[in-house]
Image (cartoon, rainbow, N blue to C red; front, side, top):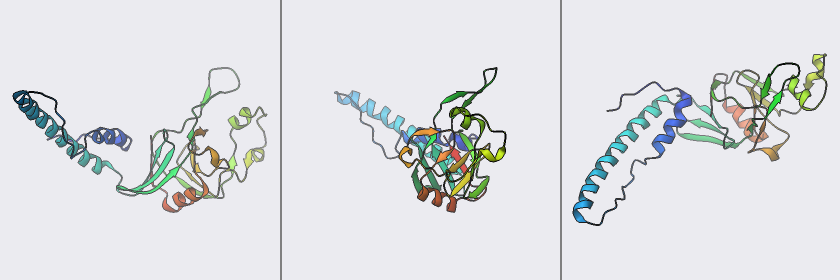
Length: 215
């Protein structure tokens, strides 16, 4: 019997990969040319397979207990996909864009930099906005070779984030995009972009407090 150990939601992916390597109904293919050797190998192979299947079942049960009980959002930044999940059911599989990983030096002395990655880990939907306006941060002007405005009103840009946005902390949002041709690519400054239809479905599905797991 395997004693369960505490695992956070962000460990779900690792556990899933581990258990996925050993299908519960898999059959062992055992080499051998002599009957006696084959019999011994078969016995050893069966014992090993039975052990792996027992481990699979234990890890699967533990994984099931660790999954959020309520519906949740799962974001795969490597494949650039966002999933809405309800337990085992995939409610939505949406093509997304996530952080580019590009590094931009901050102005002035020192070695400070902006790194445009989508954060990994466990988050919650903290806010839901309709018709959001983008308040452009300093890096947006530096990236374009423009001066940073002193008037806060000069930072506001309408119509670039789509009809909805879901905030999950530290200025990061799930929002729309004008550049749908770039969906499926790592091109953002850290936010998660969706097309209009998928964004509306995620916005309708999610509540403040809905878990978001990003890996």
